[in-house]
Length: 197
Image 1 (cartoon, helix red, strand yellow):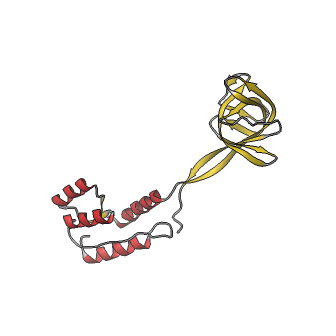
Image 2 (cartoon, helix red, strand yellow):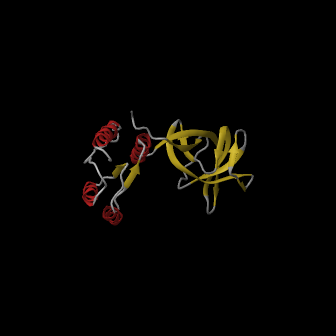
Image 3 (tube, helix red, strand yellow):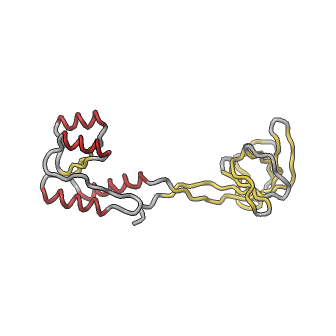
């Protein structure tokens, strides 16, 4: 940082961003230009360097590029804290939410050479998209979860089939389909991770 008081405030502000899921540790805080020893410390600690109203000297810049040490330079505190929050979110595992799309009931089974078992279905709710994930339920027990191998309507490939429509559906790597089975379609949507604050 440019002055001592700023260095202390920054260190305190950054540590306050810590949550149960992501901890921030300030390894070192100092005044003046970013130098080679700062870069060496960051490299050894697998840390990033944050410069506030200061820049790295030439040797420090070269060393940082060589060692692939990330240097972030800022002049406004809230921009710095926003960037650190975004970096923290990037450390979290992505969270997915399952979104129900549709349900089809298996009415009859066809065995087709080179394809295997094809389920003759009627869509009883929503829509079955070709690219959705599916689960097959038998007496409300999940016996398969996977993808649609092929989806046809009147022998033509279909991108989706809607409620009330008939279709032929083959499931990827699964042949044990029986009349009365229910096939549910769903998609997984990425949910913005939460830092838990």
